Image (cartoon, rainbow, N blue to C red; front, side):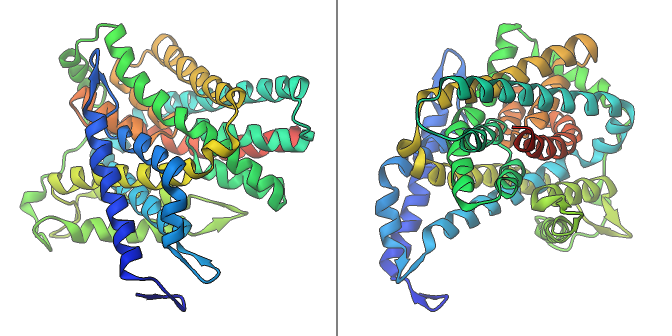
Length: 406
């Protein structure tokens, strides 16, 4: 196989593909293990991918080096981005019919909740920076400590845009690498913590899920449902509208205004929302079949977690310190509870609307997948889609402000 002037052997490609499907198989098996009613679900793929990265990344990497070119990082990044695009576009299609009506009724609530979640995380990060400067004995400079902690902040909120913005803001390659280390260390609990939160909280509250499903339907009443069966389908499963929405989303996400863009993730989410809301153009359906959307959502989530997990695991052991991991736990957990109590007692949101909004505010795609499974309804995706853009913008801005302040 010839790529970019180099040659990858069939053996190398086979080993890579074997590794990918082995991680998926073992990850799903692990995710199915239930302990006291709690299971990891698709996040099991992330755990296995992280472990694979810790112990076998060198073996994988050695197979995919041609001359001076290392294909491993780029191959994993393609898998991660492909998964993210599939997932967020699918979420857009799922939430589209309910999104605009829901946003109109609850706009202030979603904006406030998104800001509360991100700002509480920022406060926690600022406190951790000051603590670390007082106790650090690693010989790190103040700039290096700030870079590490802002990396932990973006990893705690599993925010790739904040991660990218932080690396750009620190201004040199050395500090960029430190940001990457912090992101990788905090990302583990950033994923698992929110996944467990949306599973454990309903059990603690002894929530009646059937009743909660009725409440969220009432909260989103008036939303339009698209009857696509009355329109012409370009293909049986709806791959055409899905691909078209993704294409539009990538195109829109690539535009920058004063250095700020929706990113590929935000663009695909927006395109999915609009396509899902419109339902058709003339007599042509632009909504995929329900089964296609659900499959794309699940496959996308698994691929995203796989790519991120293997890459993160490669440096996890090398740079891991327990105190950094604890900082990540604090910066993830505080916004979860701040968001939950604010949504429950101030905004008076029902449980599934509350948790859906929190997954969006935490920019946690894995947690949304878990919540949909736990709740037994995809209506929570509309709340995620409403809060996510607010949190996305806020976390990018806040990460850069932290760097400038400290």
